Length: 79
Image (cartoon, rainbow, N blue to C red):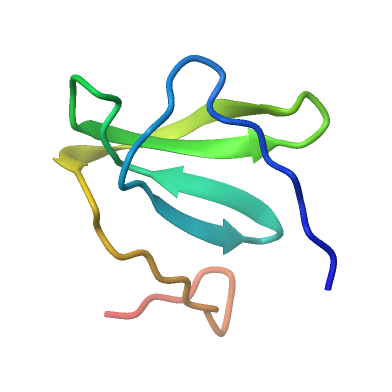
C-alpha cells in the first residue's frame, strides 16, 4: 500500500473535517478553522502540495460523515 504525504491546508488547518477520495482526488468537506465553522469543499493539488477551493455547501458542517457512491451512469440519479 502506498502512502501519500499531504500538506496542511495552504491557509488554515481545518479541524473535524470530512475527508473522501472522489475520482482519485482527496476532498475535504466542512470543518472548523479555529474561529469559524466551514461550508467549503476543497480538493488537494498534489503537484503544488496545496489545498484549493472546489465548491461550497449551503450550510456549515463540523464533524460530518462523508461517503462516496459510484453512480451507474454519469447522469444517474439516486432519486
